[in-house]
Length: 107
Image 1 (tube, one colour):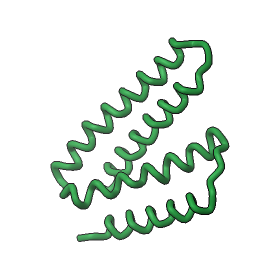
Image 2 (cartoon, helix red, strand yellow):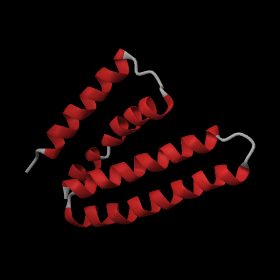
Image 3 (cartoon, one colour):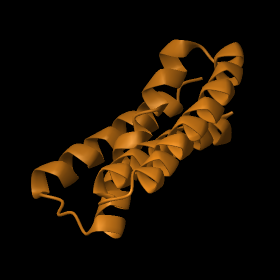
Image 4 (cartoon, one colour):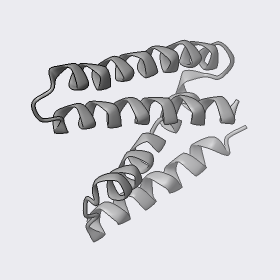
């Protein structure tokens, strides 16, 4: 089930990155609309998979795992758009990782 939760998080992250890319398009509404459409599609798939997760995992355990989005989006923004990560952001992200590990280890 962890794999499915990570997949939902990756799909959601990808959708958010599509939204950001849509804001970077200059002069072509068609291209920007394509990025938005991709985002909606990815969010739709993520929602369907999330419903599957919620059928099998208590929401109090599953939902904190979506905090992985913070990690995935920060890393992707750094790689794709060369956005800077401050020491504060890195420390905060590491705290999120620690929290996800604690929540994911509950049985």
